[in-house]
Image (cartoon, rainbow, N blue to C red):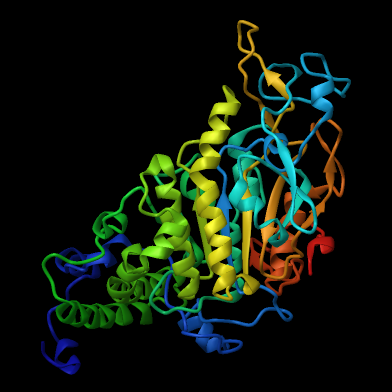
Length: 488
């Protein structure tokens, strides 16, 4: 290839033509997550931030957590069958409940006691359902928020509220805000990764969108149903061009983009595109290794159940093991979904379905907590588990009036739990009423949860803002209180 001085005078080639001609491997995917400085090097200067939006940056104050793993129980698990036992339902079994009229999505009937036994675990005596024995054995590591509440009994707005802080409007996701605030610790991997097996969930990429934040902070989606690296990450390797030739192509492309940029100052989209190609080039080596769990010892794969069939928890085992490998390598925010559909949306046969879903995930989640703890990573890794809402303590009725043996959506009260990253383990905060219909003590909104997550990461949620359309926006909108009772 001629030197740059000669290339400047070469016949012009448009950037579009160049992209079409170059076999760029992963660069063709146009990944949104970009360059990062290796290691925590303090606050980036304005020039550094302009050149590298994901350079590692300091938080507002000393952080307890450096990274987040958000395990999303897609569809809305039943709190009264998992982490919020309600013995009063036994007394009212088959009877109408004396509760206010709360709007549900479907018609429900009489009280429906949980088919699962609960037991106290750990020094804090946290009550956990029998379907989560591995998680229960680590009860002293988790803090259960039993007073959670959302806004409406529908999946779409509730998913957006939990993931983006707004049930209606397009807003940046939690992972985008976190990477906007902290940057990343790895130059060769995206700062924010969303893993969902089987394709996109409801609301698709809106769940990990960057919204009005620069596109560099959007989550990178990985379909983890695949085992093969070439299928897991499309175009991870070029089949026609060596790394050396791709480096030369990138240099030429950088020259063309620089010429283009000089005529279009401060074009954030162009800067993002230039950096995405550079990241894609480097990812061809590091991403393949990070997502390949075969590099783990057999004992660790067995701990997670990563080699088991999907129906026996193998898929969730691989996802959790990959999540640990990613945060270990400096990825700032990893979201792990339990299924692209709504697997926890059990309107029918909740005993059968919740038991099956728990069996798919309990071993893997328990292994993740234990593995992080043994490696010294749990103390500065925040783990969050939960769905978009809970489920009714009453049985759902079909159109015929017949019992479904399932539960309808319930946004008025539900549970999530957190572990690691400065969380006071072995604790329970808040409560629903005696039947589990709605939160009555320690009421915790989704904005409160987000404020708490940001606090553990070292941010005042009222100060982490972004100027857009003449207003300083934040993840928690105009509300949110830190839940200090669960902070160690």
